[in-house]
Each structure stands twice: as structure tokens, then as C-alpha cells.
Length: 403
Figure 1 (cartoon, rainbow, N blue to C red):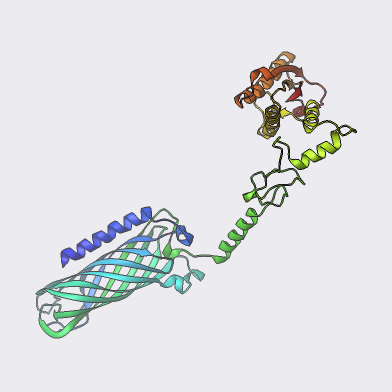
Figure 2 (cartoon, rainbow, N blue to C red):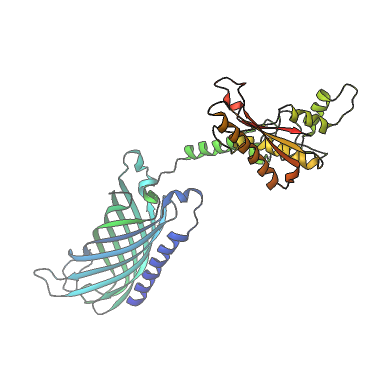
């Protein structure tokens, strides 16, 4: 029986350590630690008489070791291994008895159930009750156990708690008194009073014993998430989290995933293409959208911009490079001049070199996108002094000319 109880407690301990490491976190339970290790020691007092007729008296000592798991902030389960030593006191017959026990108990966090948090954040109360098996070594009695108790808690830190426990136990099938005398009562009753320490296992800040769920905050957070999910930055009628092109041109028709509709696959949204046709085609109605795009490119409407003294383009300029790439792919016979510019800050020689480096950087990007180098011609315009101070960022660019 003793070996069985030790084996069961060891298995419970292994389960505790493993589950703390691998248990998946979900819902509210990922906000607090669930496992704890408890040790305690104190005194015991049998309530039924000894064989000598003497009423039970307080004797040292009792020791408890337990492992507890909380399903949530209010209810849990614990396994407890205990030992009671009983002996005579002055004026009574000599005896020495040992009581080994193993219990499984349900635990209720009365502190959370009764809202202790409204007046304290460091005092708690647990209720526990359960059943178990025991051995009373006074001639060897194997007994069944029922146990009920209260545990007061004083929080020392987020991982350590001082405890004081009062528990009552009733043993069934106990054929001897605690001092070894044969009796026909068939039961034994004992009170335990202990002081102990609890260690909370886990990486979260709080244990379930002290965790307070705030449904209002959770609801507010959920509403904020829903509001963020329903933002439509480009106002195309498709919310951002479903929008594959969250920067669509205002007014352009899009599909259910927020992509511009481009039936002829020329890289220009149909709505934009329709507008350009109406605005830039010749009055006779001749010409094509590609001609219109070509005139826009050559007119400087498409440019790649750079930071001061840099030959790597701004991340915001990737759309301009992509536009040129699409045009070249859709017009495989076209060639293009890549024209580098610099502002007037610094020496003329340095600015000429920087303008060339910028044009070459754009050329290399297009080559890596499988545009033949023979279609790309680099030109350096050097420094552009047509901008006053405060607008120099507009001079640091690469422009294009389709031929």
C-alpha cells in the first residue's frame, strides 16, 4: 500500500511538470499559471479515544506534500501525500504510531468565489475535500479516508505563498485506535493543523489563485480588433484584411479581393485606362492606351526617388519601378532611357557620379526582373538646380524616356 501511494504521487508530479511545459494555451487560461507545489508541516489531534480510555490529545507531528492543478481561477484538483506521527504524552502509556496517507481532492478558490479582490490582493482562501487511502501502523490498518479542510493564503510574491491549513479526516475500516488498541468503532477521526509554503510553477505573472478576469476589458479588446479588421484604407469597399491590393486608385472597380480589374492584362486598371483614354487620346479618337502611358512616362509623371547621398531608392518608389517593368513587358520591342538626377547640394563631380549610380541601380533592378540590358540605356543628367532649398527631395530621382 505504501509503495502504491508513493508511485501514484510520483506519477502525478511527472504529469504536472510535463503538462506545464506542453499544455496548449487557449482562451483565458493562457493568462495565468495552473500548477503549484505545496509543502506543509504541523500538529495533529485524534478525536476518538485511545485504547487506555484517554481522549485524543495534540501530538507532533504531521507533514504534507502536494501538487495542485487549477482548471480555471475558481476550481482545481490536487494530489496530496501526508504523514502523521502520534506518540504518548506525559502521564499516558507509551506508544508510537505512524499514519501514511494519499488523497485526491477537489479544490475551490473561495477567495475568487467570494470576491476577496474587492478588499485585498494578498489574502486568499481555498476549500478542499476528497478521498484517499491510508495505512495506520499500529498493528497495520489499511483504511479509507475522507478529508475536508480550509487553507488560508498570504501572498509573498507572484510565485510564493504562505499557507495555514486546518483539515479534518475520517478513516473507515480502522480496527484499532491510534495507539494500537483493538476497537469495534471501525473508524478514526483526526484534525490536522499545518503551516506551509506554496510555489507556483509557470512563466506567467499570476497564478490562477490570484487571477481576476475582466470581461469588460476583454470585450473592449475584441471590439477594437473587429474595428481594426473592418478598416478600408483605399475606400474600395473591401476591408483591409481581405484586400489583396489595399492601395487601389480611388474610384477604380475592384474584384471581391480588392484587386483592380484589368481585363486586357496591361498592368493598368480598366477604370484608370478609361480615364486616360478620354483625357489624353487625340481628338480624332486614334491612338492607344500604350501611347498614352508612353506620353506620361516621357512627361516625367513616373519617377523613382532617393534619399540624400543614396543610390538605393525609397521603398515608396517601388510602384514606379514596377510600372516601368510592366510597360516593358507589355511592349517587348520598346527601349528606354534611365535618367539619373541629383540635387545641387555637394560638388558637381560627386552629384554627377551619384546621378549615374542611381540610374544604374534602377537598371540592375529591371535586369533582375528579366528585362534585357540592351533595352536599357543609362544617362546621367547630374545635378538639378531648378529646385529651391526645401524641395531638393524632388531633384533626387530617376526619370524615364521611352524610345
